Image (tube, rainbow, N blue to C red):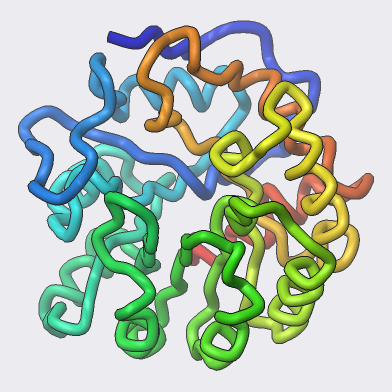
Length: 282
Protein backbone atom coordinates (compact mmCIF):
# COMPACT_ATOMS: atom_id res chain seq x y z
CA UNK A 1 0.00 0.00 0.00
CA UNK A 2 1.08 3.56 -0.70
CA UNK A 3 -0.54 6.80 0.45
CA UNK A 4 -0.77 9.16 -2.54
CA UNK A 5 -1.70 12.70 -1.55
CA UNK A 6 -4.58 13.92 -3.73
CA UNK A 7 -5.66 17.14 -2.03
CA UNK A 8 -4.08 20.00 -0.11
CA UNK A 9 -2.93 23.59 -0.45
CA UNK A 10 -2.55 24.70 -4.06
CA UNK A 11 0.93 25.17 -5.53
CA UNK A 12 2.39 28.66 -5.22
CA UNK A 13 2.61 28.63 -9.02
CA UNK A 14 -0.88 29.39 -10.35
CA UNK A 15 -1.42 27.12 -13.36
CA UNK A 16 -3.21 28.90 -16.22
CA UNK A 17 -6.70 27.88 -17.34
CA UNK A 18 -6.44 24.97 -19.76
CA UNK A 19 -3.25 23.51 -18.27
CA UNK A 20 -2.35 20.10 -19.73
CA UNK A 21 -0.48 17.42 -17.79
CA UNK A 22 1.39 15.68 -20.61
CA UNK A 23 2.89 12.77 -18.64
CA UNK A 24 1.03 10.44 -16.32
CA UNK A 25 -0.31 6.89 -16.07
CA UNK A 26 -3.80 5.77 -15.11
CA UNK A 27 -5.39 2.39 -14.36
CA UNK A 28 -8.76 0.74 -13.94
CA UNK A 29 -9.61 -2.56 -12.25
CA UNK A 30 -9.92 -5.59 -14.48
CA UNK A 31 -6.74 -5.12 -16.49
CA UNK A 32 -4.02 -7.40 -15.11
CA UNK A 33 -0.33 -6.79 -15.71
CA UNK A 34 1.21 -8.37 -18.79
CA UNK A 35 4.27 -10.61 -18.69
CA UNK A 36 7.47 -8.71 -19.43
CA UNK A 37 6.44 -5.53 -17.65
CA UNK A 38 7.14 -4.31 -14.12
CA UNK A 39 3.70 -5.13 -12.71
CA UNK A 40 0.95 -2.79 -11.61
CA UNK A 41 1.79 0.12 -9.30
CA UNK A 42 1.38 -0.35 -5.55
CA UNK A 43 -2.19 -0.36 -4.22
CA UNK A 44 -4.48 1.46 -4.22
CA UNK A 45 -4.79 1.38 -7.99
CA UNK A 46 -4.36 4.95 -9.37
CA UNK A 47 -7.75 5.36 -11.05
CA UNK A 48 -9.45 8.13 -13.06
CA UNK A 49 -11.42 9.16 -9.98
CA UNK A 50 -8.22 9.56 -7.96
CA UNK A 51 -6.60 11.55 -10.74
CA UNK A 52 -9.58 13.92 -10.95
CA UNK A 53 -8.96 14.83 -7.30
CA UNK A 54 -5.30 15.38 -8.12
CA UNK A 55 -6.23 17.64 -11.06
CA UNK A 56 -8.43 19.79 -8.85
CA UNK A 57 -5.65 20.08 -6.26
CA UNK A 58 -2.92 21.28 -8.63
CA UNK A 59 -5.12 23.18 -11.09
CA UNK A 60 -4.87 20.85 -14.11
CA UNK A 61 -7.66 20.91 -16.70
CA UNK A 62 -6.58 18.38 -19.35
CA UNK A 63 -4.39 15.32 -19.46
CA UNK A 64 -2.32 13.06 -21.72
CA UNK A 65 -2.46 9.47 -20.50
CA UNK A 66 0.62 7.43 -21.40
CA UNK A 67 0.41 3.65 -21.76
CA UNK A 68 2.02 2.14 -18.65
CA UNK A 69 4.76 -0.47 -18.88
CA UNK A 70 2.68 -2.89 -16.81
CA UNK A 71 0.40 -3.49 -19.79
CA UNK A 72 3.19 -3.66 -22.40
CA UNK A 73 1.57 -3.66 -25.86
CA UNK A 74 -1.99 -4.23 -24.65
CA UNK A 75 -3.64 -0.80 -24.84
CA UNK A 76 -7.00 -1.97 -23.44
CA UNK A 77 -6.59 -0.27 -20.06
CA UNK A 78 -5.44 2.95 -21.72
CA UNK A 79 -8.50 2.95 -23.96
CA UNK A 80 -10.82 2.38 -21.01
CA UNK A 81 -9.20 5.24 -19.11
CA UNK A 82 -9.52 7.55 -22.11
CA UNK A 83 -13.22 6.70 -22.31
CA UNK A 84 -13.60 7.40 -18.59
CA UNK A 85 -11.89 10.80 -18.87
CA UNK A 86 -13.66 11.90 -22.05
CA UNK A 87 -12.81 15.01 -24.04
CA UNK A 88 -10.34 16.32 -21.48
CA UNK A 89 -7.92 13.46 -22.25
CA UNK A 90 -5.67 12.25 -25.06
CA UNK A 91 -3.54 9.10 -25.13
CA UNK A 92 -0.06 7.87 -26.06
CA UNK A 93 -0.19 4.17 -26.90
CA UNK A 94 2.25 1.37 -27.65
CA UNK A 95 2.38 0.26 -31.28
CA UNK A 96 4.94 -1.52 -33.43
CA UNK A 97 5.55 -2.52 -37.02
CA UNK A 98 2.88 -5.23 -36.73
CA UNK A 99 0.08 -2.92 -35.61
CA UNK A 100 -2.61 -3.05 -38.30
CA UNK A 101 -4.27 -0.09 -39.97
CA UNK A 102 -7.55 -1.12 -38.35
CA UNK A 103 -5.93 -1.13 -34.92
CA UNK A 104 -4.41 2.30 -35.58
CA UNK A 105 -7.80 3.65 -36.59
CA UNK A 106 -9.46 2.24 -33.48
CA UNK A 107 -6.80 3.80 -31.27
CA UNK A 108 -7.20 7.16 -33.00
CA UNK A 109 -10.98 6.99 -32.63
CA UNK A 110 -10.52 6.38 -28.91
CA UNK A 111 -8.38 9.48 -28.37
CA UNK A 112 -4.84 8.23 -29.00
CA UNK A 113 -2.62 10.82 -30.66
CA UNK A 114 0.85 9.40 -30.04
CA UNK A 115 3.13 6.36 -29.85
CA UNK A 116 5.54 5.49 -27.07
CA UNK A 117 9.15 4.35 -27.40
CA UNK A 118 10.52 3.20 -24.02
CA UNK A 119 14.05 1.81 -24.32
CA UNK A 120 14.62 1.15 -20.63
CA UNK A 121 13.97 -1.96 -18.47
CA UNK A 122 10.30 -2.87 -18.59
CA UNK A 123 9.59 -0.88 -21.74
CA UNK A 124 7.43 -2.55 -24.37
CA UNK A 125 8.91 -1.13 -27.59
CA UNK A 126 12.46 0.18 -27.71
CA UNK A 127 14.83 1.95 -30.08
CA UNK A 128 15.15 -1.12 -32.28
CA UNK A 129 11.73 -0.21 -33.67
CA UNK A 130 12.18 3.58 -33.63
CA UNK A 131 12.02 4.08 -37.40
CA UNK A 132 9.19 1.58 -37.88
CA UNK A 133 7.07 3.27 -35.23
CA UNK A 134 7.95 6.66 -36.69
CA UNK A 135 6.62 5.51 -40.06
CA UNK A 136 3.30 4.40 -38.53
CA UNK A 137 2.96 7.46 -36.32
CA UNK A 138 3.74 9.89 -39.13
CA UNK A 139 1.21 8.26 -41.45
CA UNK A 140 -1.46 8.56 -38.74
CA UNK A 141 -0.60 12.16 -37.89
CA UNK A 142 0.54 11.11 -34.41
CA UNK A 143 3.46 12.33 -32.34
CA UNK A 144 5.95 10.11 -30.49
CA UNK A 145 7.20 10.13 -26.90
CA UNK A 146 10.75 8.76 -26.91
CA UNK A 147 12.50 7.66 -23.72
CA UNK A 148 15.94 6.07 -23.38
CA UNK A 149 19.21 6.56 -21.53
CA UNK A 150 20.15 9.99 -22.84
CA UNK A 151 23.81 9.34 -22.09
CA UNK A 152 23.85 7.99 -25.66
CA UNK A 153 22.39 11.15 -27.23
CA UNK A 154 25.55 12.10 -29.20
CA UNK A 155 25.64 8.64 -30.79
CA UNK A 156 21.90 8.60 -31.45
CA UNK A 157 21.66 12.11 -32.91
CA UNK A 158 21.83 11.00 -36.57
CA UNK A 159 18.89 8.60 -36.14
CA UNK A 160 16.87 11.02 -34.06
CA UNK A 161 17.43 13.88 -36.49
CA UNK A 162 15.88 11.85 -39.31
CA UNK A 163 12.53 11.15 -37.59
CA UNK A 164 9.57 12.41 -39.59
CA UNK A 165 7.00 12.66 -36.79
CA UNK A 166 6.79 15.36 -34.21
CA UNK A 167 8.37 13.80 -31.14
CA UNK A 168 9.19 14.47 -27.50
CA UNK A 169 12.51 13.79 -25.78
CA UNK A 170 11.04 12.41 -22.60
CA UNK A 171 11.84 12.90 -18.91
CA UNK A 172 14.50 15.63 -19.24
CA UNK A 173 16.43 13.38 -21.59
CA UNK A 174 17.24 10.89 -18.77
CA UNK A 175 20.99 11.43 -19.06
CA UNK A 176 21.94 8.95 -16.35
CA UNK A 177 25.68 9.46 -16.75
CA UNK A 178 25.28 13.22 -16.28
CA UNK A 179 24.82 15.90 -18.92
CA UNK A 180 27.90 17.33 -20.62
CA UNK A 181 28.02 20.37 -22.93
CA UNK A 182 27.92 17.88 -25.81
CA UNK A 183 24.59 16.47 -24.61
CA UNK A 184 23.10 19.93 -24.28
CA UNK A 185 24.32 20.89 -27.75
CA UNK A 186 22.66 17.78 -29.24
CA UNK A 187 19.36 18.62 -27.55
CA UNK A 188 19.49 22.20 -28.81
CA UNK A 189 20.22 21.08 -32.36
CA UNK A 190 17.32 18.63 -32.27
CA UNK A 191 14.94 21.25 -30.91
CA UNK A 192 16.00 23.65 -33.65
CA UNK A 193 14.72 21.20 -36.27
CA UNK A 194 11.17 22.26 -35.46
CA UNK A 195 9.57 18.83 -34.88
CA UNK A 196 11.22 18.04 -31.53
CA UNK A 197 10.04 18.89 -28.00
CA UNK A 198 11.58 18.50 -24.52
CA UNK A 199 9.48 17.25 -21.61
CA UNK A 200 9.85 18.45 -18.03
CA UNK A 201 8.71 15.35 -16.10
CA UNK A 202 10.11 12.76 -13.72
CA UNK A 203 13.23 14.74 -12.83
CA UNK A 204 13.84 12.50 -9.81
CA UNK A 205 14.26 9.44 -12.05
CA UNK A 206 17.65 10.54 -13.41
CA UNK A 207 18.90 13.07 -10.85
CA UNK A 208 22.14 12.23 -9.07
CA UNK A 209 21.93 15.23 -6.73
CA UNK A 210 18.37 14.47 -5.62
CA UNK A 211 15.57 16.56 -4.19
CA UNK A 212 14.19 18.88 -3.31
CA UNK A 213 16.16 21.05 -5.77
CA UNK A 214 17.34 18.39 -8.30
CA UNK A 215 20.06 20.87 -9.21
CA UNK A 216 21.73 18.69 -11.86
CA UNK A 217 18.46 18.37 -13.78
CA UNK A 218 17.63 22.03 -13.13
CA UNK A 219 20.90 23.18 -14.71
CA UNK A 220 20.08 21.43 -17.98
CA UNK A 221 16.39 22.33 -17.89
CA UNK A 222 17.08 26.05 -17.50
CA UNK A 223 19.48 26.04 -20.47
CA UNK A 224 17.08 24.15 -22.73
CA UNK A 225 14.07 26.25 -21.74
CA UNK A 226 15.98 29.49 -22.31
CA UNK A 227 17.05 28.24 -25.74
CA UNK A 228 13.62 27.09 -26.97
CA UNK A 229 10.75 27.84 -24.58
CA UNK A 230 8.27 27.12 -27.37
CA UNK A 231 9.52 23.51 -27.43
CA UNK A 232 8.95 22.70 -23.74
CA UNK A 233 6.04 20.69 -22.31
CA UNK A 234 5.40 19.60 -18.72
CA UNK A 235 4.00 16.58 -16.92
CA UNK A 236 3.46 15.48 -13.33
CA UNK A 237 4.53 11.85 -13.89
CA UNK A 238 1.67 10.88 -11.55
CA UNK A 239 1.37 8.37 -9.89
CA UNK A 240 5.16 8.19 -9.67
CA UNK A 241 5.37 4.46 -10.34
CA UNK A 242 8.99 4.10 -9.24
CA UNK A 243 7.96 5.01 -5.68
CA UNK A 244 7.09 1.79 -3.88
CA UNK A 245 6.69 3.22 -0.35
CA UNK A 246 4.82 6.23 0.99
CA UNK A 247 8.05 7.69 2.37
CA UNK A 248 9.56 7.68 -1.15
CA UNK A 249 6.55 9.35 -2.77
CA UNK A 250 7.20 12.89 -4.07
CA UNK A 251 5.46 15.98 -2.70
CA UNK A 252 3.52 16.94 -5.84
CA UNK A 253 2.86 20.50 -4.71
CA UNK A 254 6.55 21.20 -4.04
CA UNK A 255 7.64 19.32 -7.16
CA UNK A 256 5.30 21.39 -9.35
CA UNK A 257 6.65 24.66 -7.96
CA UNK A 258 10.27 23.51 -8.25
CA UNK A 259 10.08 22.25 -11.83
CA UNK A 260 8.07 25.18 -13.18
CA UNK A 261 10.56 27.59 -11.59
CA UNK A 262 13.10 26.39 -14.17
CA UNK A 263 11.15 28.11 -16.97
CA UNK A 264 11.93 31.67 -18.10
CA UNK A 265 9.50 34.29 -16.84
CA UNK A 266 6.27 34.60 -18.78
CA UNK A 267 6.31 31.10 -20.31
CA UNK A 268 3.61 29.28 -18.33
CA UNK A 269 0.81 29.83 -20.83
CA UNK A 270 2.95 28.62 -23.69
CA UNK A 271 4.42 25.60 -21.90
CA UNK A 272 1.33 24.42 -20.04
CA UNK A 273 -1.41 25.29 -22.53
CA UNK A 274 -0.50 26.45 -26.03
CA UNK A 275 2.30 24.05 -27.02
CA UNK A 276 0.78 20.82 -25.65
CA UNK A 277 -2.67 21.78 -26.93
CA UNK A 278 -1.27 21.80 -30.46
CA UNK A 279 1.08 18.83 -30.08
CA UNK A 280 -1.55 16.52 -28.58
CA UNK A 281 -4.39 17.78 -30.79
CA UNK A 282 -6.79 19.05 -28.15
